[in-house]
Image (cartoon, rainbow, N blue to C red; front, side):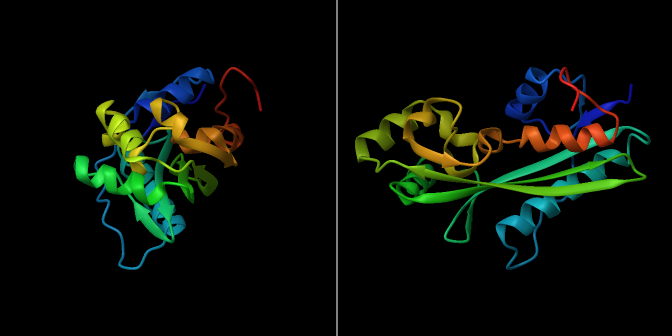
Length: 192
């Protein structure tokens, strides 16, 4: 059985892989996450996933390394993790009643071979009142999440609908990851 390493400290990515039955180690990347000026969301997540995977793969020759990055994009503007409560509130107000895209880039490498792919999921929010925004901020949930919300938690009540992979919105497009990992002879509970 090949060793799988998740190049991320994200508890959501760990939970998704655990639920799918993967055995893996966690080694967060220390890669430089600076992006070129004018980089779009799709290009950004692919580049960051590659940087993260390469950084960890260099330390563990022969292991299969999974690097991932997820962003929320609205009108081609990337909404990262909010810096403070005011930033989170502003992001939620921008997303209110609108459709945005959650992009994830995934890079899987064993040093000899590298596969990179991107997944996009369209998410529509209900219109949000000031009271809704304030009560959601009071949960503390928005502060470590791209776009200032988590669909898998309290933030799920903000979402009217989505089109695409739910797990992608959580932070890891699990179904496509499973197929690429299988090509590296890495399997969870269900053999793909």
